[in-house]
Length: 289
Image (cartoon, rainbow, N blue to C red; front, top):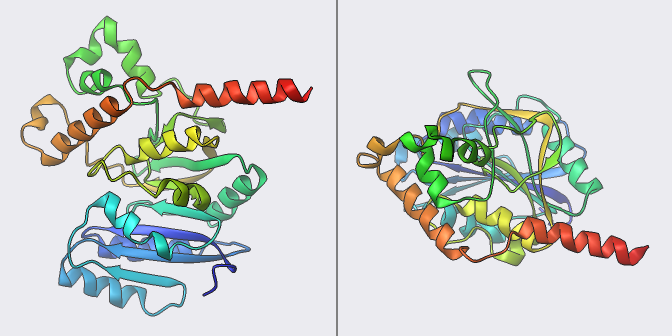
């Protein structure tokens, strides 16, 4: 398959969800698009039964590449390890639990990015199985607010408004708009940006690489956009869910806190790149008049 023919590469990372991945891929293949797409499924399960489910369910389709890892390299490294397999103008990171039930989702997303080349990352509206809109949009992370969200502090007057803003509860989820960052369960990324920054940041183990990706997009003069003109469907389960008490029982939650702290320390004295982008755009437009 020639890189000149593929426009979008869809990457799906699996961990013990073989059957869900097959359903996921089926819906991707049913998308009505006017371009060629490639699908890469990465199996990080290290489980023969799950691998066999994927092999049998995905078959030998020319535009599907199945990568069976012999070790669980983690969410971030698994994506970076297949970077040389990514073809086309755009990359779609797609979690196994996300289903594309609208058959024009990919066409709409690609069309919008083609029409707006200053976009680096684009994410659609997500709807949970319960019918609720998933809060996939966040403000740039602040560690003290991430702690407050999981404790009684979130209800104190001093924190309540700030926590609500951090969770973007005020956002009008019906409007296309620029945002700080998007959770990477379903995002389209300009391949040129992905290659330039070297994929996901491996300073993190499991979390915060999506926040870092969007931060880098803004720093490189490319917008991050929430795009609700199409919607995808998620199971609504968050691996990082849980409060303070859960912290002591959950390795995943402890890892989330560690990665969050690492992100905040790395950017403690950094200027807001989104604000800098707008300032630069204002100067550019002013000098063009």
